[in-house]
Image (cartoon, rainbow, N blue to C red):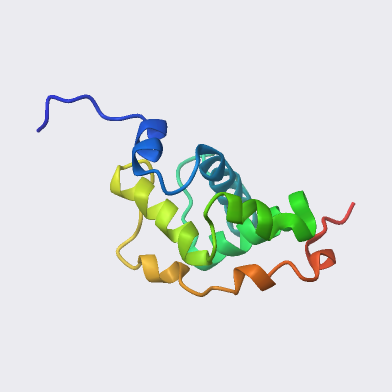
Length: 131
């Protein structure tokens, strides 16, 4: 066991350097939406709720489309997110440092080619929230 204190999530993200802190905040929001859609509650309510890589990617796509519309690929690109695998790399960085958990069935490949990210926002009306 190491005597070093555990690094904060921000420290881990900054040391990794592949994606900015804002991208991880967005990832967290997408996780909450995925949990809400799949389980009907937030990730912090009454224990943890698992979602698949596909479910998380779809929630992140929907959130990006709602927030930025057709500009979503540009915003994500500025954060170095070019494919759904980048979402997985972010998740697995957090898993590696024990900020998230995975099941035995989960793998980074669950995030690979879920959809073509640059083309996912062509018809943003599909993702608009209904009032």
